[in-house]
Amino acid sequence: MTTTIWGDVSDLVELLDVRSDGDGRYVGAVIGHWERPVVEGSQMLGQALVAAGRHTGGRRVVSAHMMFLRAADPGQPLIFELDELSSGRTFTALAVHISQGARRCASGTLLLDTTAPDLIRHAVEPPEVAGPDEAEPFDMSVTGRDVRIVGGAYTGDPDAAVGPPTMDAWVRFDGLPDDPVVHAGLLAHFTGHLSIAAALRPHPGIGQDQAHHSLSTAVNAIGLSLHAPVHADQWMLYHHRSTFAGDGMTHSDCRVHDQAGGLLASFTVEGMVRGFAARPSSGDGKAAL
Image (tube, rainbow, N blue to C red; front, side, top):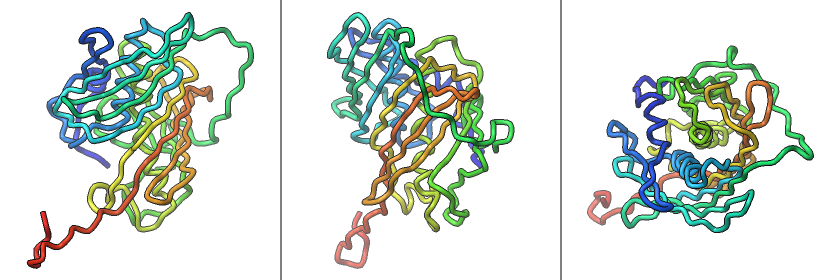
C-alpha cells in the first residue's frame, strides 16, 4: 500500500479548476510538490472537461475523446486552447489542444448539451459486486479521496494470483465545492487509473510494479460519455473490463455507476504495455547512453 502523501482533494480541485486566460484559452495550475515525472492523461481529460464547461456557460459535457501525444511536465503549466466547431441551441462541439510551450501534449474533441426531458430511457445494469463497506481500502496517496478495491484485486505484484481481466473500485471525494464541472472533472480524472491493471491481471509474472522499470506502460487515449450529472462526493463504482491485450496495446471497456446502480458514465481506454527495448552497445563493452 502507498504511504507517500501526494496531497489532498483540494490540490486535485486546484489542478482541475483551470483558469481563463483570454477567449477560448485556459491555464492549469502547477502543484509544486508533485513528484511524479509526467502528467496523467486522465488529468488533462478532466481539465479539458472543466475548461469546456466554463467556456459554454455550464452546458454539460456528454462526450469527450482525448489522445495523449507526448509526455507533459508537471512542473510547467498546461495551456488549453478551445476551438468552437459549432454551437446551436442545444449542442456545442469543441476541439481542444493542450500544450506546454511549443509542444502539443494532447488533442481531442468534446460535445456539450443543454440536455432534454426523457423520451426513452434504459441503461446497462451494474456488476454484481460487493459494496464499498465490504471492499478493501487502497491508499492512492491523495487524502480525502477514498478508494476501495472490490476483492482486493488491485496489486502491482507480478507474483500475485491471476484473475479475470476486470477490476472494480469504489471512489468518492470529500470536501468538494458545489461545482458540477469540477465533479465531472474528478470522475474523468480517475478513468486512467486502473484499466491497464485490469489488462495485466490474467497474466502471471506481469504486474504494475514493473511499470517504468521493465514494462513501458501508458494511457494513449480515453473516450468518455457522461450520462448524468456527477456527484463525486458520493460513492461511484468504476467497473473496468479489459477486452483485448496484444501487439503491445490494451483496450478496456468501462462503466461508472452510482451506489444505487444508476449509470453515470461509460468510457474506453487505449493503453500501451511493452517491454523496454534493449539499449544498443556502444562497441566498447559499455551500454550506449
